[in-house]
Image (cartoon, rainbow, N blue to C red):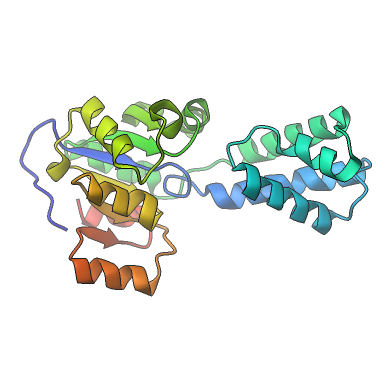
Length: 234
């Protein structure tokens, strides 16, 4: 990857949050299964696997940022909302999620390294602003970031060029000297490229077709296994 390393304050590294700084998918799945188990044990009339399947369908239809998955679950299963079961599900989900919330092993070392190299750091996320700040605060990494730019705030999601343009403008960043680090090929990498930046993919399930496309189009996208490998590139 070719990154201009001249000194200056227009060099920005933008991060995605979920599955980039922390393993969101694993802890969310564990927390949801714990919630379902308690709801079934307290009267939700499905077996646990069936109930979890219904919940996954609701999440897929409503989106992960929707705030009433357990409300809808009881409505679908019972024909009406059950406040007690909803409360059990919500409290268990949040308690387990927060207990498991951890950054990837190399996350903090990478953030420290990038700051030492003179990069300014910010977040670009397709999430709710308060939820993303909550994760950064709970992980105790919030102080590394100058800005958190979310799709909720901008009104457009990655890979829309607008959210990247807003982020660059807020950070007064030069796109040619800035990089996006994320785990999603289309949203993070292609979105950044379209905004004139380079990109690094970490923890990504990028396909061989994606790799061929990067090579064919000579895109400035680097793929690494884990976030700690960023230190060898920037």
